[in-house]
Amino acid sequence: MTNIEIVDTTINFVKESLKGAEGGHDWFHIERVFNNAKLIAKSEQVDDLVVNLGALLHDIADAKFHDGDETVGPRMASEFLNSIAVDQKIIEHVVLIIENISFKSSLEKKGRRFNSPELQVVQDADRLDAIGAIGIARAFNYGGFKNRELFNPDIQPNLNMSKDEYKKSTAPTINHFYEKLLLLKEKMNTITGKKLAENRHQYMLGYLDQFNQEWNGFL
Ligand code: ADP
Ligand code: NI
Image (cartoon, rainbow, N blue to C red; front, top):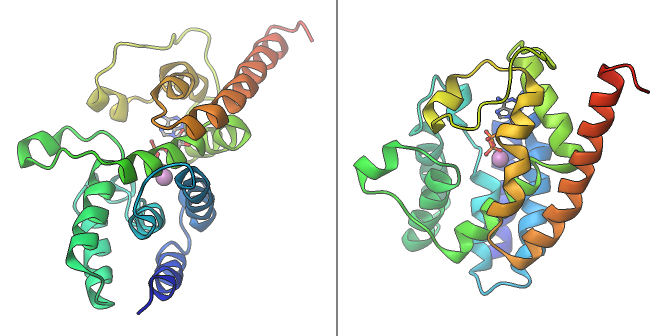
């Protein structure tokens, strides 16, 4: 298969696998991350096939929706890529990207902690989709999916949670902005990612200001 055929076959596989997925993790999330990744990759020295496949397969089976099992996604991706006879080196790199795109404490134990320019591009692309107007929509969609409150003035954001505590937290969705989304701008890896994040960050600040004013009856 040519690289274009590999990517097209992967697109079809991902679309099929994500049928019925929650709105923030559905095919359109993958499509946006794929497009962001291609845009960012233009200014980076990376293997485009690895970036494309990493973006397309990064949420193929998110542990959040598989009883916390972090091995399902990497395994599905690897089985699929093997089934279409992709080069082993590429498969291993893509699997490492899926495992490492978001923090997982278990990686240390397994000796699977990894970084690469390709991972950094896909990670920036995924982070961009968590901020700005789309990030706001995804946060409230996720909060609704988890039956969270929108906001509760009696529950303050907690900036000192460990990553594992954070996963178990049932705090209102507005807290997620202060605990995570507003911190993403500083974590961007690439210059293009940083630029795009800045605009989306400002939009979220404006949104939170408006939200607070409406909540308090000032507008
Ligand atoms: P991804 O699965 O895309 O790598 P995450 O799993 O961290 O990223 O989050 C997916 C989306 O769900 C993001 O838009 C994120 O803001 C949102 N989300 C995750 N946790 C929460 C939460 N506790 N409250 C609200 N939104 C959340
Ligand atoms: Ni994602």
